[in-house]
Length: 223
Ligand SMILES: N[C@@H](CCC(=O)N[C@@H](CS)C(=O)NCC(=O)O)C(=O)O
Image (cartoon, rainbow, N blue to C red; front, side):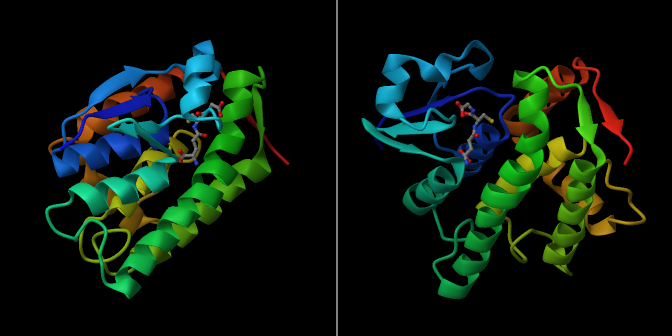
């Protein structure tokens, strides 16, 4: 196994999706902190590795790959002892990919980041109600994605669960999923929390982001 380095910061949900994947695969790695609150992702040295200046970034024996979704597919394909976390079966893989693209486009970027980025980086303190309505729309869909299964892409834990849980546990800060309305989501979040590596790989960083966001004393505008 080559030398793996993860560049990131625990408050970042996509970084935590990679940490969960590495923990599940039991792959050792070096963790280098790149703190976006200090604009460290814009350093000349980092831009050479990732011109898109996002965290997470993975370096595997000198080869760089970024975007959490691409990274977790890469890790599960290369280091998985079997294919349960990222199935080789074309249809089951297609379902996992669909979930990952949904997180990448709508759930993380279109919904969570569109709320958190102005709060953290632009001094905005009020959130328009339509953005909270978008969170409810995400929950409606995730409840359907879960269906009768224990996990986001079927009966087995996959990398899609890691991508979703890191985003969903932060959307919770803005809209708590009520058990009577979203029983499957609530049960799934509890299920994921029982993973032995959950707290270290996701729980602690999610708590850090929650503390940061709550320190902004944001309000939600009524329409
Ligand atoms: N789709 C990307 C999103 C990554 C992302 O937006 N990361 C944020 C932190 S949560 C970041 O690096 N922001 C700093 C920047 O874009 O300069 C992924 O999944 O890796």
